[in-house]
Image (cartoon, rainbow, N blue to C red; front, top):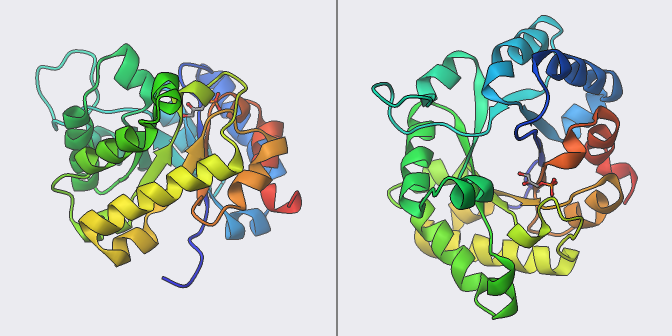
Length: 260
Ligand code: 13P
């Protein structure tokens, strides 16, 4: 693919903002973003489940071209899974992107590569786009096994996903030591791991998938570092946590092209 992939900048709100705060946040965000921004960058927001309906209503009523995203789902369509939410339920709310395998879910709720793979396939089957997260712990970076860890997460997460489906997906590289810590991977390190991820996709799914899949960087992305990270050839977007809660900060990240 010779054309540059359109960046996707996603705000993962994690367990923050009730539905009133969520409505205010997307409205304020929409005052900051312009048609040029939406032409240059795809934008998604990922509020907690309790806010999805409210945010969907605001986005649709005010015609705001921000995509609705979710942070998690189960892989089954329905059944006895107390507390869980299914992909078809999210699709019914016009959710476009669903995060799968965020490191907080892997580490705090014991999500395995196999569970992440089941979710990725279920999200695709429901017609939505997975944002599949991968990333190494600090010890893995320090003992030189980071690439191995991330490569195996990519391979396992994409098992039995067709090359065409992978081409439309998003993979987020989020080094765990950079999440919420204020520590960001250097643009060079983030680029190197993104290139590794693309190479794993090329080997397992072919050159077309590797050329089209979008790779986001996540981990302490801020208005001040977004431009440099996004300037790397294999980084096609950002998955933003803390800085996405504030519409001023998040809009400045979306407008990263003005700072490069
Ligand atoms: P921070 O931007 O707060 O480091 O969070 C990153 C993240 O986990 C996004 O999914």
